[in-house]
Image (cartoon, rainbow, N blue to C red; front, top):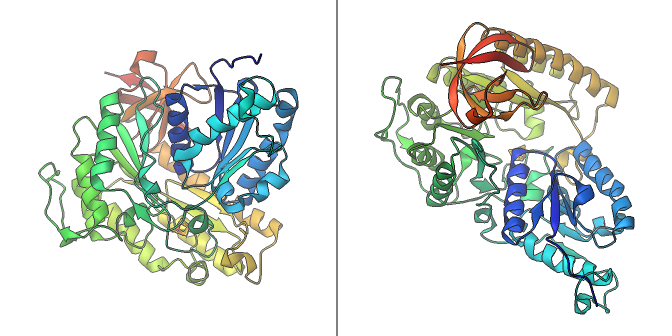
Length: 483
Ligand code: SF4
């Protein structure tokens, strides 16, 4: 007689961006709905899922290294199910099964909604082989049963719509579109996430309403090129300012409104939602209607993340980023004029193929000139089957590292200066939960996306209140709540 399984436990680890985090929450929700229990460690889990990233080589190596180490668990508990999900799974598909003998499941970016079915199937199969569950699930014809699903699926953009919310969860991500048609020459995303597909405004509004009912106060709308939301599906409309607009700061220039701005207005109008963010926009398509919306929609956060990638027009062209340094600078000026004091952050790649000292210097000068509040600096890493991977004049690792360190110094100094300006003032904070570095304290974020650490009672998680800022370092602000 076989033993019956207790409630199966799953562990999911996410590599990469916020979109991957959002996808993982969808998978977690679907497994919990089937009766699985989420655990915080792979050691306790019957199902171990790694949701992978492909954007940089380092992220792939980390996920592969982690899965390799999990073979120990597989030896002691052969019934454990192991799966790779997400971007690297999409890019590499079945070849991963050959590289990692204990791997059972490979699911790409358009199939997250199928993961629970596949996991159920594999749990029963591996349980049967190990003598734990019904032996009829043993497939004698397939001694090493595994599942790979990296097919495209029409409508998959609308399948990321539920998530496993924690009690008092104050913030949430909402995926509004999938894919990207921009084909930047360094980027693997168009291959791993497919072509642009957007959800409808009604679907997104209904998801945000449900989150707000649960107590969520801030949502971040996610898309690879979020401001180009709906460009293939939905029409522009004539620009009329919505009734809930902040008319004191309104400065409407655009005559028509893009689908993205229509979506921002619809989500902004939801009662109980306090803050609205979006990431990541592309400088292309960041038009006047969106700049207007930044000025008249008060719920829009005091922060825009605007990827620059390079401060050299020659490199921007080679990257297939269809804007110039001059256009980007004008855009920054317009955003800052629309919402004085708005925080701006960016992404920059150093060491792109062919980047000369003078190209790098142009980036360095532009970064110094634009005074970003923060920036993510990446050393270029070749991604297979992208045009940049085979470009001539690849930059050596030492030069990339030198440029990386140099730029980080400039950015860290700018971040410190921006944070020091806040010392001695009161800022409004949405309290998110325990601080990551000291669980005895709480942390929250300002509308400008600055992390604030303070001491307060646990029941303040999920509330918005003022904090008097006493000190700052390069990463965070420290203070105490004031009534
Ligand atoms: S805009 Fe460029 S960098 Fe961003 S996801 Fe699309 S191809 Fe990649």
